[in-house]
Amino acid sequence: MDRPPAPRPADELVDGFGRVHRDLRISVTDRCDFRCTYCMPEEGLPSVPRDQVLTYEEIGRIARVLVERYGITSIRLTGGEPTVRARLSELVALLAPLGTDLSMTTNGASLERHAADLRAAGLRRINVSLDSLRPERFAEMTRRDALDKVLRGIDAAVAAGFSPVKVNVVLVAGVNDDEILDFAEFGRSRGVTVRFIEFMPLDADGHWDGSEVVGRDQVLAALSPALPLEPVVRGHEPAERYRYLDREAGSAGSEIGIIPSVTTPFCDSCDRIRLTAEGELRNCLFSVEETDLRAVLRGGGTDAELAEAIRRCVASKRAGHGIGTPTFIRPGRSMSQIGG
Image (tube, rainbow, N blue to C red; front, side, top):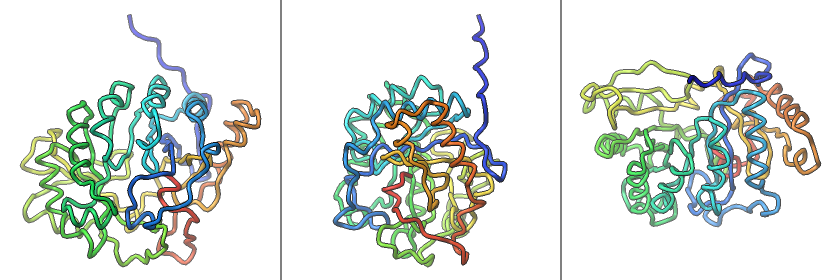
């Protein structure tokens, strides 16, 4: 017997430019066990007090309202580093019945321990951040000697049945841009998709000036002579996808992705909203304003009041982030404090 069709959401989450929002990023913690140079200072950043961090039940309620009321179809768990929060699989099990594309971004250092449990709880996909395959350089970039742990974590994710496993590489000119071909070969050999991401102005030290951005053309120039590529028809996603011509489409390690957020922004089709660990809703990664949903939750607000606060936040979204223009305003938070 066929299942009845899923109920249609009561409304759509639309901003003033007609963009419908379907993608929710949830930061489960602002804490991280790495100190990546492009994200956090060596001494770290002040952490949000634990009693101000949303509980799993509060996160679940916000997610439910967004799915039932506004038709959110994708949820990604982020941090900080999400696996440093205790009993993460319980949150996954709470969110999985909502029926979204439930995924997570992690630094991978604890993934060997958690991959199987997260998969069993209902997590569907995993992205692992990895910016160097060279042990000394990895230690310099993350300020942690943990490359072997991350590599074992990637293998554990593949073994647990996550597909595709994606490896996110933030390229920084003069730092790791000589590893582009190495990462491509790594993806092909490990059966994972490698995605090259442009360095964005979200470093805690505030040193970003655009000179360290490695753009799409530089990535393709490094790859094409050795590994000929062809573009893949792009869906509703930020990554530009390319397939290796010597690989069967859809086979493990058959693609790379490039996310040119700075040089070729995808703001006109952006469908993302972000929830910080303490319950602030952001309608853009580079937003300078936030909406306090924790106050609604802990102040006895109804689901309708919560939905209205979300609607107002998204309605005020700007046309684009404006990086590289005179109107760009750098957010007051770093990436670890916002959630990737």
